[in-house]
Length: 363
Image (cartoon, rainbow, N blue to C red; front, side, top):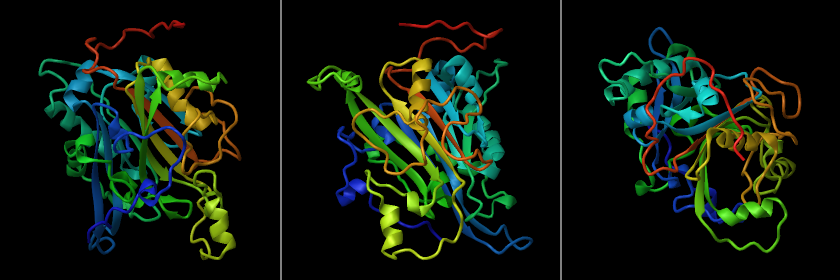
């Protein structure tokens, strides 16, 4: 059986969210040098021992530059975790060094180790490490739980799926990123309906920053930067679904368009990857990654959907209790932010620090 065809996006239906203009494809690949690939695993087999059961899962790869070049040269990066009960392998390096060395892989909770292991040979074949180099390569892999639709206990992800997701990564030349039930989004459930992969982009002029501080009359002039987002959505109850400020979920419930809930999705997860070509440092990119979880929002675009937000920034660290309601093992959100401002990755050679690096505030 093959996955369903790509459905229309909100903008295809005339829904315009926010006031800032979108990029040419309204997706994360509008940021220069960023590519995205998917490998969708969609099988209907009998349960063990005759087969592996039903598979609704996959792998999504966000690839800045090329895999081998990225490892050797690095790009600035930051990461933030909210209610971090899920796994995000590799973000400790991002937090400590402020750089990204490998593609970012998204997948099923029970396949995160498989994807990590399968990514390493791909990076070695891409020339990330020279033959006589004793450095370690540690991919960035994160996950959401697709166990409601996917028989994940029987190992549905294979190394070839990881290889395909990275190899098939393409940029804006082929149009917007495929979304919905594709790649890692294949088995997601969001607001008690089908969840999956979502993506968007916005163009921000340098002068727009003044509006954040209430300075009126600033024209949209100066350098223009692109901010792109890719989200893996797997959370929420239908009554909380909001589209461009409209409480769509409440309306659907009130008017009887929906039946009884088949599953309590109060608990869930969300992974967001943010990319930009703005010249930001790792510490600044961490703030950009933390913004969606903190309740801060720049003038312009509003998220189509989202969980309850905290009114104060979440503290840095592996676990944050920002947000509303009790912290749950299955309620988590993580964000990784990267900058691809340079026309080529940083020329600084990759070296592991022998001790904890010092930090300094840059005005």
